[in-house]
Image (tube, rainbow, N blue to C red):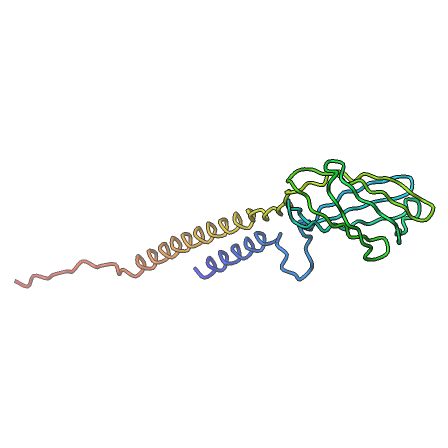
Length: 202
């Protein structure tokens, strides 16, 4: 009986080790599902300049603060001290103000009147270079995509059910083995009766 229980215990331990073999309980960094975007961006290229416009979700009728990064196309060096004029082809009446915040980084401020797609025409004069570039795909009213929730850990769940079933099976085997041993002991403990012999002295 003792040997049988030890054997069952060893089987359970071995199965548990296999069920958790794919899990990593260490402190090593795990790859993330991907960074969640906090801004939108649009870009444009020409033979002289590279433009990158970044902005948070825009709302109609509210102040729009957009960051415009300008660099040299050939060297990728930031263009500082540029003279910029920004207009909107879809709404010529819109006014934008531009201020330089750091070398190559400019703040563009304005208000969009409706939730729709706009574009910005940027006239750039920097030293002996000048260009007119179009930034399209600026969508007012669009929200940032929401990060997908992590998928349910189906494998650990299956593993836990297997463990429960194995434990239940081991428990049932233990009960059956115990009952068998008890029956054998009980049968061995019953003494064999000897028929009584009566003498008649009459």
